[in-house]
Length: 68
Image (cartoon, rainbow, N blue to C red; front, side, top):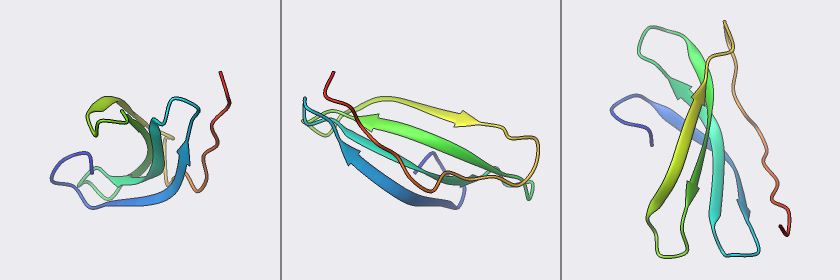
């Protein structure tokens, strides 16, 4: 999902503007797993993404969206 690494989506939430928000675990290729979040517009275009280094083994398992 974030490139050539082995990434695993784990959660999905759709907000009031029909944007798709995804979270999961990203393998950086060095044996370190980080968590990521990505937002995709209702037209299917990536708005933004963020990979967060937890300093060790980590990964997101759920995501929620608010109305605002």
